[in-house]
Image (tube, rainbow, N blue to C red; front, side):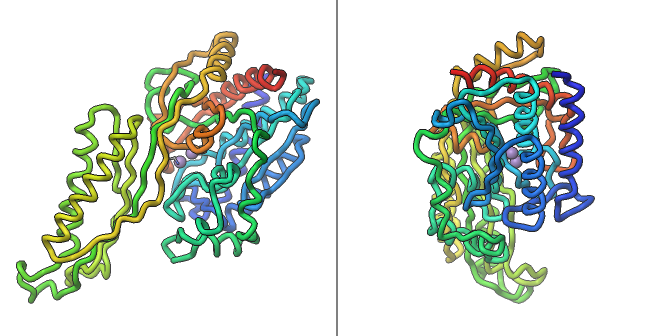
Length: 413
Ligand code: HGY
Ligand code: MN
Ligand code: MN
């Protein structure tokens, strides 16, 4: 398998996919159940068909390409990632994993490797949770973790629910549970992904073998005070939602630092309502994203936020709401799969190292219930979730070679 050929096809496909964004010239914005998502899926389906795969779209918005094995009744090996993005994100996060899995399917066939079990390429519709604030919707639906109530519960910033967004995309949300794969039909899941962090690039290492993924909790918090005139309302008569919220927000980074074990916490969105220069804010909405390999740390920081909100909103005579958007525990990935990939790295003379993932990925959801592993490629300067996100196509090709070597072994067991 010529790496140059693989590099060329991966580059061709990812370059083409760059056009499917709602913010051209300002990074990739490809939210679930949008025109850009539809266009990207149609292109992925075309590539899958050309690669000789049987293509299926499920009732959740996921797309799958199936290379049937000699015995399709066996649990399949699935490889893939997500085709959605963050706002103004990069051109590799998620989508590169799907393209490399399609290239792996091409390699199997071009090298005459007939898998014993089926090999499935997966494109998940909403890993980021960018539009609805949650996450892992597509992979969760595949596992039977999403139902109709879930679709109605979460809304985007325009108050459009997942339910309504699915309908406008042409799906029937009432059929969401049909997206669940039969128990035991998926044997293993492997995801190729950009590291989105600085380690591999800084240490000039070609391959990352991911042994665990942090747990995540996400909340949408609303602090309620009272709107008042900014000039005539004395300071001791205000119910200033900004004062209460910022006293809590300002403490969160240090609560994460105190754990001193890589625990992180981020307030990514802050929104004041009504948002006028001369109005004391009635409300503040803000998000919190807490991550750690130690689940107790996440729970502790979430509890400290809750207690601080109680204290600060009582102080102003206001109130708060802490809506849970996502709770998912840390996951250990499958060492048997990782060790096979380690052997392939040695055979191919690629440098590699084991490392944890601070980013979630569909593997975090899938790894809760199935043997799962991840393979990372370097992110230039560790940048991601921004236009500067960059990964060399030749690095993606190298990782794809490792995946093909892995597939050759695990589809013949
Ligand atoms: O946020 C994350 O961890 C991932 O990029 N979705
Ligand atoms: Mn991401
Ligand atoms: Mn991702």
